[in-house]
Amino acid sequence: MSLAQRLRALLKALEGAVDVHTHLGADRAFNERLIALFKMLGVSRIYASYYPYDFSSMRPPSEEVWRGNEVVLRYQRREGLVRGFVHVNPLNPDAVKMAEFFLKEGMRGIKIYRAVRAVHPSLEPIYELAKQYSVPVLIHTAHRLYPRDRPNESDSRHVAQAAKRNPNVVFIMAHIGGGGDWEYAVRAVKELSNVYADIGGSVADNSMVEYAVEVMGPDRVLFGSDNIVWAALAKIASAELPDDVKAKILRENAERIGL
Amino acid sequence: MIDVLSFVGCFPFRYVCASAEFVAEKLRAWGFERAVVAPLAAVALKNPFKADLEFTRSLGEFFLPAAVLNPEYPGAEADLEALAAEGARALLYPIPYQGFRAGSIKAARLAKRAIKLGMAVLVSATLEDQRQYPRRIRLNKFAMRDVERLVAAVNDERLILSEFSFGEVKELAGKGAFSVDIGSRGIFGPPFTQLNELAELLGVRRLVAATYYPLKYPAAPLAKALLAGLDLERIFVENPKRLLGL
Image 1 (cartoon, each protein chain N blue to C red):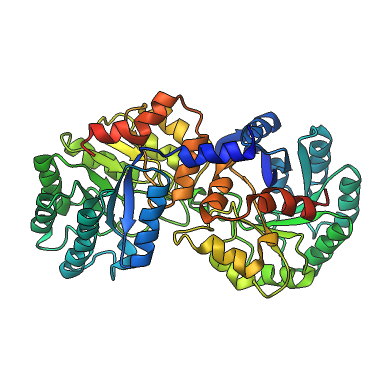
Image 2: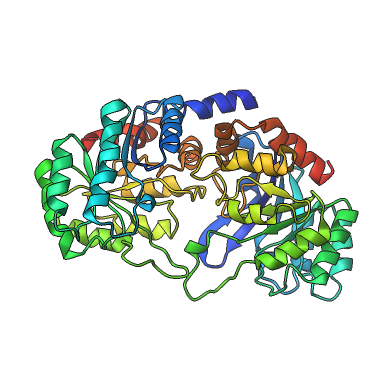
């Protein structure tokens, strides 16, 4: 195969994909560029939450979270490609009300960043809401070994604990390639059928996706980029997996959980 | 296409082993015709010469051997010459398990000697993503002030920096000539303009690509260059050929 043919194949690797983990933020030009890039690659849907670094802190006040979610909702209304995940800081007194508002407006999932870990009691009503609306909860996760874990960052074992306590809620353990020990991450949730993992993040170690499939099975691995599009593209294009398994990762698994 | 740095061997802290056959097969599948390769086992040795030598002699046509040397070890220059005579095409300063400083006079002297011998000099900021290190094993990156000294002293495009972030590369720009591996994890964002900014800052002729350690999915650097709309022929073919003297 010539280089040109390989590149053409690379550009087609994401056709029809559902990206379960993206972000849109305060920078409009960036948002437009990201959306154009996904369109160019033939991605059919992206699930976006507000870019957490555009908040003033990891525990943003309610007004900021409302504004951030409104930005995403506007894109959802304007762009057929975009669906929203509502960002929630569960420590805000109106967190449940806000999450419910945006779910009623058509957002399709809930995003938890680093306000609290996945096992924090403040999340229980949010998990209850996710169950009620049958939407997945995407949890920022990292099994980070060095130099240390970050404050209020969920480790995969926290996701596992939350999933055990809430067996009727679908959890998405975010970006196994987001930095940290991805082997540990997928093994920690191996037995939990209500936990899915997305392959996003900038770490593109060879065999990462194959390992996730080997440990979790082909039905619980999801395509996600966390906006690192080159890495997501490379992971799917290079992974040595049968086409039917890639199709599951790219879209079928997401569709099964309502995305 | 040429991969300017990959590794063969096993890492002590993770079962991520790659034989020469495995690496060659993976890279060939994506159209790479040659690859600079370093022995992972040599990275942690005080005196890696014998490991380098055995490794260099064991490789087939596909690979261009890199010599991992500790510039502060007595006889490093003679070792480098012996390895060059055996076919080594590059000198590699990996993350400093060996404890030497990239900014030392000896490190600069050995690097300049390598360039005189027609080799490239590869400097890597970290062996694997630091967030995956075992907590008790503290492996510092080269200090930026030391890298800056090395860049200033060598001042040659054949000095290739790998696994440095976009911000670090920007910091080094203007301190001396060097080239950059676009496969590095900390390059190309978001934001998606990083690679284009890098091309403007250094010129496309200073960009090359590596699959590194642990071996990245080989399509990763291709995907970056493709999405940034950069000239792939130059990054994957012309530049590495020129820098490696092929």
